Structure formats: structure tokens, C-alpha cells
Length: 197
Image 1 (cartoon, rainbow, N blue to C red):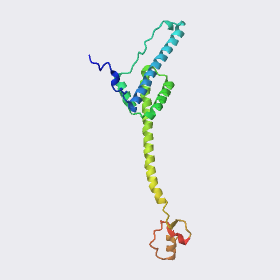
Image 2 (cartoon, helix red, strand yellow; image 1 turned 135 degrees about the vertical axis):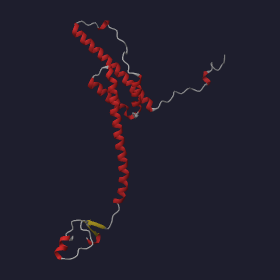
Image 3 (spheres, one colour; image 1 turned 60 degrees about the vertical axis):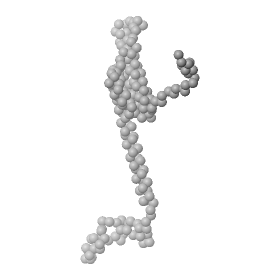
Image 4 (cartoon, rainbow, N blue to C red; image 1 turned 180 degrees about the vertical axis):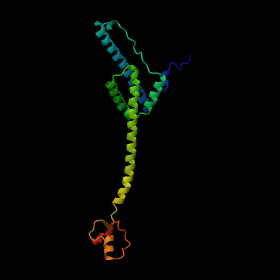
């Protein structure tokens, strides 16, 4: 028998493994799903008891013993939901839970329908994440383009554009006078230097 097992204080303290934010999000969301399934089962039992009480007129609920957790989602569906949960950013974990609870309150589902509502809440938030990401990308692109275009607007030239100047020649005036039109394109505005004003 070795003495090293007696002297565990010589060993360096073991650190708990650091979990990634994605793992924490998946675990949190799956715990919320399990809790909502249990709550849906409990509400379903309460509704059944109320129905029996109304039907028979006698309350035998004190005699009934219930299973702790009778419904569980299939392993394949659980893996699919965990995969969807892994796509959720940590900052969107709260909005997923809020949306899921809103759906639960709105539909009051049975235990078998809870996972479908959870999947719907996950898809809603993933779509919202994609929309916000696209909006942020466009905003970044706009800001970089806008910065370069602002540098051009700061440049002041000595020429001004005056499209409605009173002495603008038109083709009809040249035709009436019988003179050849000048080389200037008539659809373009007239450019003048600031010295003319």
C-alpha cells in the first residue's frame, strides 16, 4: 500500500472543467424544456382530476399516486433540439426562454406537444438572429461606404451647378434664330464658376 494515497494534499487541486458558453446555453434550454414538460403533465393531471371531480361529484385525488415523470422525448428528437440549441448565441438564451414561455401560456399544450413549441421558439429566435446579423452587416457596409463618400463631400469645388438659370440656351431658341447649336449637350445642367456669381 503506497503512502501517496494517504497524502492527497500533495496533489495539485483539480479544476472543474471549463464549459463553453454553447454547452451552457444547450444545458439551460434543455432544462427549461424538461421543466415545461413536467409542468404540462402536472396541468394535464389537474385538468383530468377536475373533470373527474365534476363528473363523479367526489374527490378521490388524495388516493391517487402519480408517476413522477411519465413522458420523455425520444433520443433522436432530443439530439435535434440540442443541435438547434447549439446555434443559439448566449445573449439570445433569455429571448428563447421568454418566447417559449409565451407559446406555452398561449396554447396550454399537452406534454407531447411541448417539444414542438420549443422547436418553434428556437426557429423564431434563430431567424431573428439571422435578420439582426444581416442588418448589422449592412450597417457596417453602409458605414464604410458612407465614410468614403463623406470624404468626397468635404471637397469643395469652385464650380456650381445651376440647372434653372434664366440665361440657359435651348435648342428651340437656336432653331428660331436659325443658328447652329453649340457643342453643349442640352440635357446637362450648366456649370459656372463661383466668380460668375
